[in-house]
Image (cartoon, rainbow, N blue to C red; front, side, top):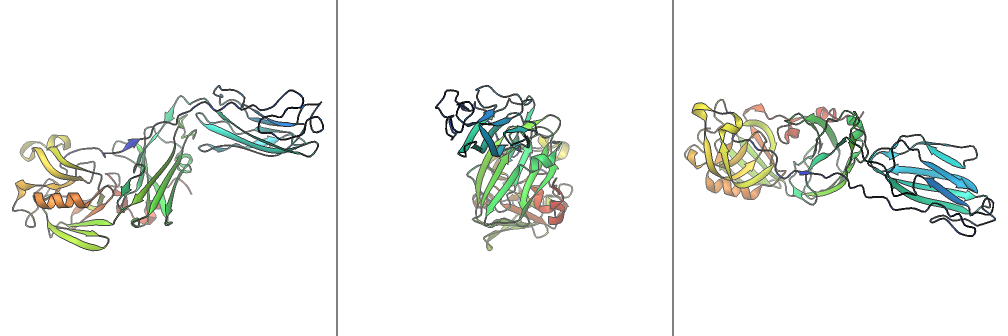
Amino acid sequence: MRQCLTSRLGRRIAQPLALASAAVVVLAACSAGGKADGDSGKAGADGNNGAPAAIVVEPGDTNAKIPVSRKVTVRAQGGSLSSVEVRSPGPGTLAGTWSKGKSVWTSTTPLAPGAIYTVKATGKASGGSALNKTASFTTEAAKNTFVGEYYPDRGTKVGVAMPVSITFNKPIHDKAAVERKLKVISSPVVEGAWSWMKDRNGKDLIDYRPEKYWKPGTNVTLRMDLAGVNAGGGVYGTQQRVVNFTIGDAVTSTVDVKKKTMTVAKNGKTLRTLKVSTGKKGFETWNGTMVVLSKVPTIRMNSDTVGIFGPEAYDLGSVKWDVQLTPSGTYAHAAPWNEGKFGVVNGSHGCIGMSTADAKWFYEQVHLGDPVTVVNSVDTVAVNNGYGDWNVDWETWQKGSALD
């Protein structure tokens, strides 16, 4: 049912978050009459034994990476604390406990590895003046980390059927913890949902899609706040990403296997109906909706790559105008060797073949993320064979989330 085997092209492996050393923060001054950087308070009258009132944060006064075994302590010298927030974009906010009189706050949540934490604290000196402190520190990197390979790429324009798709290089045991740190925002606002699955190589994969296709012109933002997130089994995330992309025109194609035609429409208006030849008996083209993964003007198609040998074997060295629809090897392409079959008989090994002129025209119309729906065939394309997401009903799709 396939012409040749290739992986999704253009997918970018997001690089681990660079853990640059946090800036040195001077947390308190010891000489009389001075003020700690970022603090406010009166010396002498508000202080303790003549020292200025201040908020002191530990850790935060070193360039060294902080072991995750450390606790965060925030102390009000010569006064009391009003609020303390310690958070990192990935792991989130640390919980903590207060001392009697609220002069000291101590974290109770373990630090996450490979994360940058920001501490924001406010308080009052004993004389009534306000105290403020902002500090940051970086924790030691984890020894065992994971990253997500995501689509689409930043700044791209994609078709209306393009999901947000992330494949992880390590097993994700705590899927809920990871999913909580993934967010998709769109303008105009649209309801969408994440759903987990395995990719064709057995890796953990999560896709996000709306109930129906995106509207043309929609602006979409993916946020990946995974730095320091525990995926279970001692594996921690390293990524902090914001990925913006836009939705282009609604270019939709429908292939009717019985009629041997492909009708291409743009924003609801039919452009052309092409004569095609799809998969012959035993090699039927997948039924259902597939999504354009890539385009190449010329490719070699060798049946060895998809396990077709013997009388049905082929090795075509220069196939023109190739639009990839599945990683298993389904393409729409020029098939001049089948001249006379287009619109008459299905004679391919699963691809959608057409004349060279028609294939070139189709190649120029479609882009990454455009849907191609096959009807009146057999065996619906699997959800993880490319972007088969649209072959799952909305209720079932939502049940694929790891969150309640």
